[in-house]
Amino acid sequence: MLKLENISKKLGNFNLSGISMEIRKGEYYVLLGRSGSGKTQLLELIAGLNDPDSGKIWLDNEDITTRKIQERNIGLVFQDYAIFPNLTVFGNIAYSLHCRKTDKATINKEVTGVAKELNISHLLNRYTNNLSGGELQRVALARTLITSPRLLLLDEPLASIDASLKDDIKRTFRQLNRKGLTIVHVTHDYSEAVSLATKIGVIHNGRIVQEGKPDAVFGKPANRFVARYAGMRNFFRVRFRNEGRSWKADCDGKIALSLPEGNYPDEGLIIIRSNAISISKAEPQNETGNCFKGVVREVAPCEYGMELLVDAGELFYVDVPSNDFNKLQITEASDVWISFPAEACIVLQSG
Image (cartoon, rainbow, N blue to C red; front, side, top):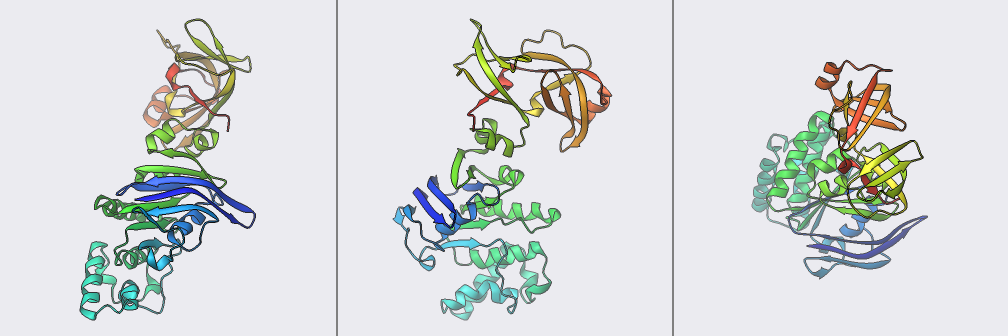
């Protein structure tokens, strides 16, 4: 469907460098990155708003690297919607068809159809200055979809949408994707990415640093940047040692982590998910993985309940569901035990 081969582009003091990626027909590809990472610039290259300095862009096996935006049949929805305030909703949606000199009957049929699909039929005769962010997003989307694009590009499509409306817009995107539309969606929001993507590319400083299915990318991040993006907070610089039938990871001589069987370098970085760590008031029995006694230093609410900071020789962040937290009656300065299996230790590249 879409293929980028070694794309590079210099933009002032910033460089997109050596970007290669493939997006199959029907995929929902989310390009995830912080502000200034190059994600919007890459989207503009795909759309045809800019040409790369080097590399190739293919769409359905056609080289479109230098083809004009009007000749690519790619739909682009801008972050600020780019709605025409002097036109009604109908006029905005019909704009591209008017430019193509489409006959009036066809325009009416196409606009009515796409408006119904996006649940904005009741807005067709209104001007856009009093529409909500969610309504504007649907109008911009309808104006793009009416051209029947081969590929839909979304630039931070939920950034200006109220939280209460985001689920409805996400549902619309999913429905379009289920009908076979290939989507490339740019965002800085991790939760947005994992709730929509069938494939994720993480971009950092103008390079794709990891790519794959969401579970693979965030279940086993390639480096510290990706892990932090996924909200992981337990990072330990370690030295590995082989004890014959088992491996240990020494954390600055304070504690040693038990690891699963494998081949390890002399030193590296380990992460442990906060929700992979169990906590108890009494020492766990028959614990065959990692088990350490510690003291609770901080207690704070988090998305999944409560987050505890436990000093067990090293500092561990532990996510505890609200029900479990209430049963344990843990407070700051409580003595606790933390435990986790050897398989919870993920070895990262040092980046």
